[in-house]
Length: 275
Length: 331
Image (tube, rainbow over all chains, first blue to last red):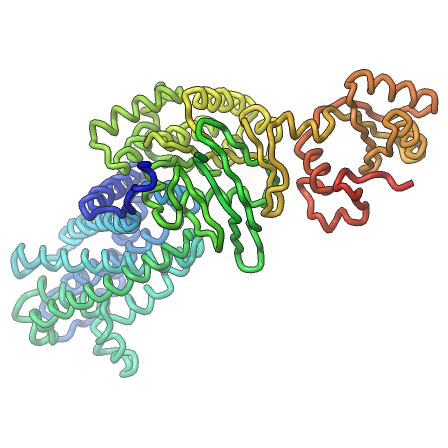
């Protein structure tokens, strides 16, 4: 009988890619249909940009820098928005868990990884939109990229990639937290120390030693500095202690490492959360 | 050959035993109704059969495939509509169904055609291009059902398909499910409602506290209940006299629940008339009197000695008869 000879099947890689595209499209469509999601995830970063620039800008002296504070701030705030934006991954996943959508997906002969990858990719699309808008607002506020368009674009790409990596951190936190409310607060816990004890808003030189050691060696500082090294005037790099080549390599290593570790953890959490 | 066959399925969540050795088996082409109260283990069994959950022990074959050995193979052959309408409210009905088709590896064109076909069949084509958040609860359930049919499943699993929707939509859904069954779909559905199981299912399994406690057709189960029941409510002072009157009609002590008494009514209205006569001769005027159909509560009372909604321990004070029958008034 055919049922006895039926071979054990998995889901092929080509199908997994196709399924990921379907889920990504679904999540992006949702974003497009819920304007308030995009609106609020855009308003907040823009508000931060305006506040930090005009409130702190005058009081913060960037050592050795010749440019305005906005040129220091923009690369940092891109990274900050990418990280904050990643919390949407945790929210989206917990929502789908709660409504039974994930049960439906799991009862289908589809690649399980597509649910998580489709979510993180959709959040990457949203982040791209948010960051593009911030660059426009930043430009209007006086920000200039001083090493050409190519390097600026590379810097933007690095911050987006970091946001994508952080989406996997948030995916594992969200799946552990299980409800949107818990995911919301749990998601921001790691974010605050990493974003504020970093070079995102101010140089780390002014921090007390114990904090500076942490700040200088954690990924958000590395990424922010890498993006910065691709955007501010080349003759300022040495004075600010930014080594472009080394920072880009370190960034890539951090991004790859975070995706590897938290991708694994998220998949494991996913199996537990739904099992 | 059975299309669904489980043997001694056991599943615990920590201390709580959700399924305690459940064995069911049924052939293709029928509707199997799993009837039980909240927390009986119905959803857990469905989740195991649809590969969403692994059993601690025991085996389960769906369409001839072991759910543990080849879950992807099982997923190719089943459809699931869970307890909540698992549809995306910000997409249109059509987009929801098409997405499921794409996840079954249908091409864009095939998925579109299949969505059209399924939405037509489910009677939602008129609302196909509206976002689901504008749908009523009943329409969402229908759409969920449509999504579960996209893959032309050999077995369809419906977990409490009408729980939480209004009575009108419930009747519509029943019609729809009956129509699907006429088309040859094999169905396993869970329900808390006896009337639902009675109307839709060819065979009913009664599940309670993780065990299958009875199985049979709706008529067989009702025969075990003895059909209709006469139920009266009285004032405290009349309770004893009323119980005696009922006992004279039934030839046995009535079931007592607070100030409500009931006896089986094998002769329907005739039993009711006899009860009225006896009450009158005892000068008892009941607060309320009714002839009613057995409910899930009666099934449970008869089969398990406890009501569907309460914990068995709480009923011990009243006691059960040796044959596991209904609680009787103590003389």
